[in-house]
Length: 76
Image 1 (cartoon, helix red, strand yellow):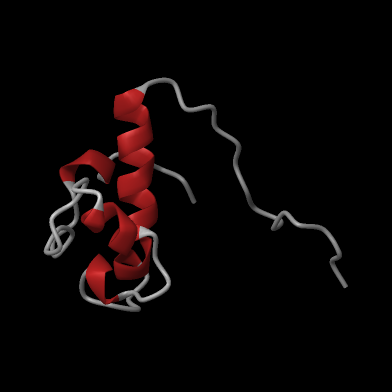
Image 2 (image 1 turned 180 degrees about the vertical axis):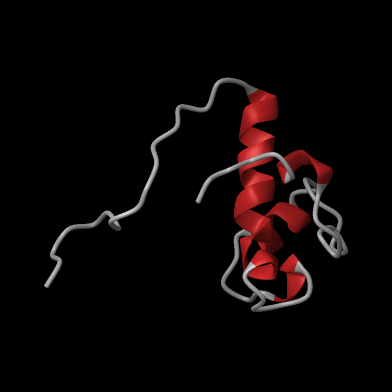
């Protein structure tokens, strides 16, 4: 019966700088792998990862292994 946009467990974070933005983008793109939906981000068809590859921000094979940039993030 929830009628709000936010899920019950969410966290808010202000992006501090370019490095912080990149770490959060890595986290978002790696999430389908982390939860076992695919083996690498490029296989998740609903992701903004594909546009990021086109823009040269990521290599298509990025994320086959958990990125070092997100290992210490506790976002859940």
